Amino acid sequence: MSASDSELRRVTVHSAAASADLTLPANLPITALIPSIRDILGIRGAETATRYHLSLPGAPALPGTTTLAQHGIRDGSVLVLTKSSPVAPIRRCDDVPEVVSATLAANHPDMTGHTARVTLAVIATVFAALAGLFAVPGPAGTPHVLLATMAATATSVLAMRVTGCDGVILRGVACFATVAAVAALVGVLTTMPPLAIASLVTLASFALLEVSPRISIVLTGLSPRLAADTDLDTTDHVAARATRAGGWLAGLHTAFSASVASGAIVTVLASPHWVAVASAATAGCLLLLRARSMGLVAIIGGMTVATTTFVVVVVRGLVPGQWVAAMAAGLTIVAMFVALRLGSNALALSPIARRGVESLECLALVGLVPLAAWNCGAFSAVSGWV
Image 1 (tube, rainbow, N blue to C red):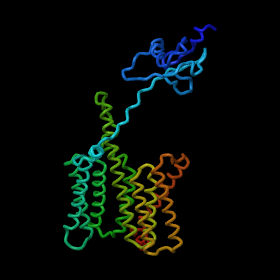
Image 2 (cartoon, helix red, strand yellow):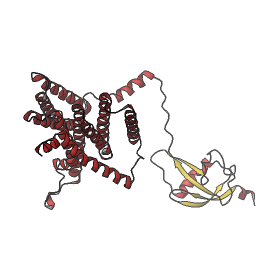
Image 3 (cartoon, one colour):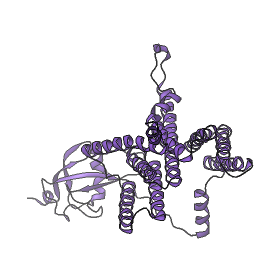
Image 4 (cartoon, one colour):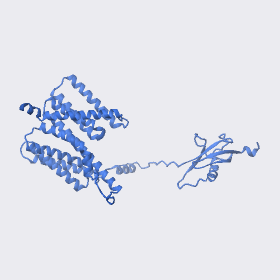
């Protein structure tokens, strides 16, 4: 081999778009070879600054100040031409107070934005409910609750119109106040005890949860209808209606979950009998079983009902200490599972487990009906007739 041949390397260079067999000087820096290699491969200059590297397949880039001979590149070797964007410079801080001020200003919530308006609307609704509660003279009773819930409903609806925040929270508050107002109206017009009203509210709220998707579809105009081809909605209109339907569904789920929890809590507080405890426990379990489709609102409602039922059972001494310990352990396991369910997306149920949960939910819902009838005194009335 002549001296001139020993100073050349016959290699194959591959890039993302092309490849070529080249003869390259072995003693020139790699940085000096890259422009010619780019021209031969037909690589045009990028709009942004780009750095090219030569490397062996599966190996790190060869330093630009070294030569092919120093890396032992022989004839027949395969090289890869790659590019990398320059690393952004690290910003150094020379004025700590200025950086702190800019960070706090960027992360400071907008006091005139959507969150502030919703918060003030909720506060106004609470004060309206309190005003209605104390406006009726005499000791607190069903008429006080009726006026308070009606005031809360009117204020929340008015707040949605005035502030323009037709969101999940205000919709949920308005729907929940409406359910509570209807329950209070039944208590005013009839002689039904709070236990019976609360049981019926719990049962009716579960029925409303079942039809919530259909209600949201009807309210937003997504229900199927006969129309001519010229009257078909655009994709943007359908997407906007779908977004509104999702907001309505979330608001209805929030409202009816809260009404279920409220009815179950009133049920277990209004009666010392085991039937009321069983009714509240069943309602709490149903809410927890619906967490896979309703999310956080069902988990909060179910855990609230379960905790309240446990506290009532312990305070009233309905079970011995061993059963109390077992119930506490069960609630701990449920709470840990819920925490894991919220913190990980990997806890997906298999089809068989999902079908089992659906069957258990159906059985619990069916069992809630006779419990509600028992709390309403239906069985006592039937036995009296017989």
